[in-house]
Length: 331
Image (cartoon, rainbow, N blue to C red; front, side):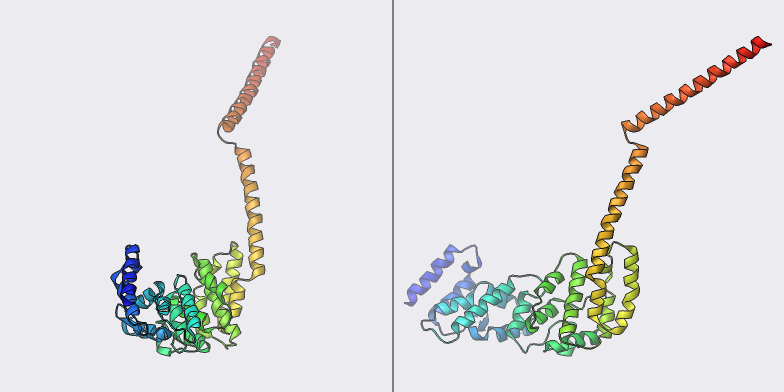
């Protein structure tokens, strides 16, 4: 009965007094489900039916600019809890619960392409990309993303990357191809890998979607490739790449730009050359140490050289004295 349900909710909260499930807000949300299992989920003023979570989250974000409450709802499994209080099984319930588990998995990953941004686009197919770079363009379809970024290159600060959390999540939700390796590279902590990851993702999009020349975006990305170029050990290779970039920018081809920057054969040659040069340098360094010596060895060499010089000088002086005496006797 209702009394037992409320009592159980309170007792369960007591077991989690230092956790979110022990807060008053969580207990109230759970008590509301006990009292009226058919009513919407209610949490801190955020109200929705479980099959309408996506639109409710979109409204919350657009109105308040904050996804905190929807994300707390997901993190605390309130929609899943709502289903447990329903006595009758209804069509689509299992599908909805599976979807909530999937959304929570996105929420638990902090990298670009995941988080609440990914949840937003996964649950709202008609939601335009909310990146500040693209708000003016109302980008709903994945095919429109790169042309919009190409146009944005003329009005934004191109010192910043054409990639942010919203753009990455929008691509992940709307693009049908597997881009997990690209997202992993984009989220890398070192700037070199992150830059190459950004270029590889955008180039993959242009290639797969068969989008024509992107002069503005190519120029934008080309100006950000410094960390990727500097990853090459050879100064000659770096200069050659820097010299080639303007030509590819004029072609508007991100795939060709990516092939130039992250060409597997060039990387292999550069790595092998670096190993050879390191070995040669180490060998030369050993030779220098052998010639110069170090520590007691250097002192020993100096003493030995000094003794040899003294002996030679002594012999020469003795010979000189003997020569003088011999000459004196003769005269």
